[in-house]
Image 1: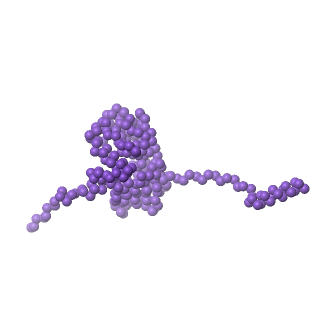
Image 2: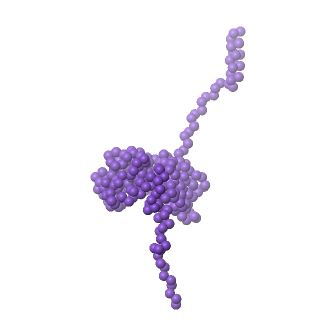
Length: 263
């Protein structure tokens, strides 16, 4: 009798509780990051991939022999023109130069057709030709390590380095700096041959120790842009890209086109 009552009680409890607990579901698969989503709209690049000649982004690691950056871009941008900017050119909006053709964003091994793209402090928003927007966060970009060329370590000029001299040397770079790198070498074995620090969040970009006067104006510009982005400090007129574009031909300096002679 006791066994019968116990069985009935268990059955009633299961019925009232909605049955035995279901096994836990598998954890959901992580959502694809912005770079993977953008690649899904793209296509493989025809032909072999060429070696990189440059990289840009925040520094995630640096030592006496190499530098690692979270690279922002691929090989280049085709058919894009800047429609507007913040004065610094960092967070502008880019549209099609030829409206009958797409903007082509190129990455190592693949490319994607776009209508527009715009920069934000957190990354980049791309509108692909099918109309979808893809948010490409800075953290979505892969980190790439580049060994330093002997010339960079010695402070001498590499034959492939554009310009006269190095802007910055490797020991001057800190983790968190935003840099642009000059690269040279075969695909997959590119070496860093030049470094330019463009931002030092919360601080100031140091002036070049190799040739301070040659690089002074550019570094003052970087620091003016950073002060504007971080604290809202007005950008001096001489550094504002929007004013420079509007003043390409001041009225008193506009070229004079002679009138045609009468026959």
